[in-house]
Length: 153
Image (cartoon, rainbow, N blue to C red; front, side):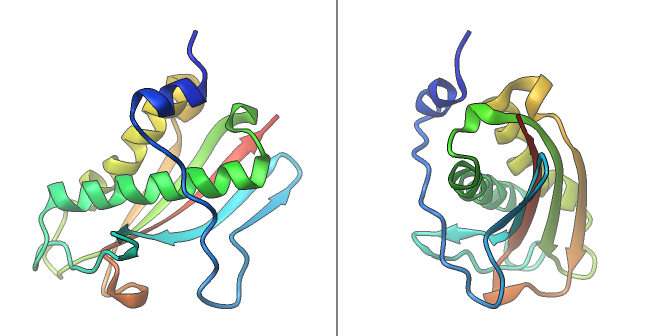
């Protein structure tokens, strides 16, 4: 049986350190067994991944951006709990997708995050409730922002 770290290694993923918040908030808060991660914007080469789905970005690129956000979220979650093997369940993912007015594939963009969480944690721990919204704009022009709630042991 492989561990979370084994799965990350197999996927070639090294988790980043927690990003310094860009405004008046903290990266995570734990209340009881739940850990709430603040929204993380998509980044590419260390800078905001700017774009609007349905205007200058397609669904496949948006899903790649959501996957990148998931990696950053995992780095923050690891900092919050010390060891990702303590995660009992990914409870909820909320995804905001910078979308043109007629764009309707926010759910497919968000799969980039959800699929990675399933690969890393497996179906029992990684399957989660989820919402995916299209929004007119995100901070710094980012294409995707995602927040996460996890339960820890």
